[in-house]
Length: 266
Length: 287
Ligand SMILES: Nc1ncnc2c1ncn2[C@@H]1O[C@H](COP(=O)(O)OP(=O)(O)O)[C@@H](O)[C@H]1O
Ligand SMILES: [Mg+2]
Image (cartoon, rainbow over all chains, first blue to last red; front, side, top):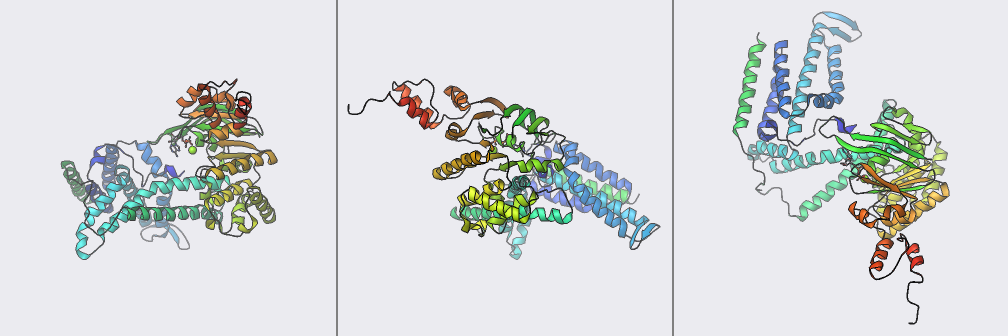
């Protein structure tokens, strides 16, 4: 069940995207997410979806894998879009009941919310699927480095991030194991009303927290016993290097941005 | 309860980059009230196999039959609750499933889920705590204050309290000291005899297989490669080694004795069998 979710998962590989510099990937993914809000007419959506389709192709992973992986999140997106649909006033009113209404503006904004959300989640999925957690942490650290000027604890933040990312799969596995154990003791996670389901979460969360805290404690001991000190200037084993491919990727996104702006006004 | 696997296949995360074979065409039968050991190297599919016994995993193809319940790819989760109750499942490191405020309430959690009344659940919890040898004064403590061995007993009691007919044990003694291990195995044997349980034990301890099992299933690379009595399984020491398994201590000892000129009709598997066969072969006292 949990293993279906693809957001936040990394699949080792050697595609062109896998090999891009994590700094480039982080910045470009964020950039893409920002320009996703520049979409206005259907031409701009076609462009953005064609682009993300091309990016998925470059990951070397199958389309159906993405579709199924994003599937569980679709409901969240649909829910947001429906709220948007029912509460947006303006334009022609097709239907209304109390404070709920369906208007032409509502249809427009909810469609936009739905499509933009989809673009954003797909891009975030591509980023984590093709970038090792430690590479993401390295990338973030490198990007945050200028903040040292204002005494922002960059090294510690990066460490926190890499530890968190490192333990996501471990915690997911553990959650699965605990769920199995509690299902065997008669808990039904996917049955019954909201209250019953919320109650079913307690026997999952408590052991999960107990385990996570215990593990954090062990990790801290292990790091201390090996003399870890966060604040000192550490050299690194994996040195990030900017390649031509990274420059190409930046140029491609800039071109995308320009075309998008042109299409907006058509 | 008798258990039958009929050409069971299981695939993890089919059609994804993480696709992996869990079980490949596994068929066997476990008679009611018998003791079956499942052995095999790490990653051979033992845990995958036992999770089919109570429907935590459903076969991708093939049928698992437990008593008169049939589990196939099409079985819906709604029908699994009675199977969950009748097949008790003790996972690896079961102490990780404890969560409630007191030991008593944690043990009663299963019975409450399966529809017993509060009073019945409490009385079942006390009985189960007694069966696993937990002293009464621990019942009102938090499970997180107990020692590792005690926590494991609480978790096992939590499974027993639902009164299962089949007890599935996935490496239940992993991480215990030798004495704790011996005590726990003796406890399972007693439970089986007292409550007429059908026991399935996943283990790396060949001595436990020799001492307790009526039959053993050997797994390798998701396949069931051999099924038979412990005597049949251990009859060929070369084959056993090739499967990254070991002989029981007594059998190993006997093999060394053979190189020193001792003779055995059949390879002894337990200390008793070894002693019986050595009687008469040892030099008389006082020589
Ligand atoms: N959740 C999972 N997803 C993918 N593959 C898995 C999963 N769980 C187990 N496997 C694979 O299935 C095989 C059998 O595993 P398992 O039944 O846990 O073996 P054992 O209990 O004998 O050590 C292994 O190759 C393992 O990598
Ligand atoms: Mg296992």
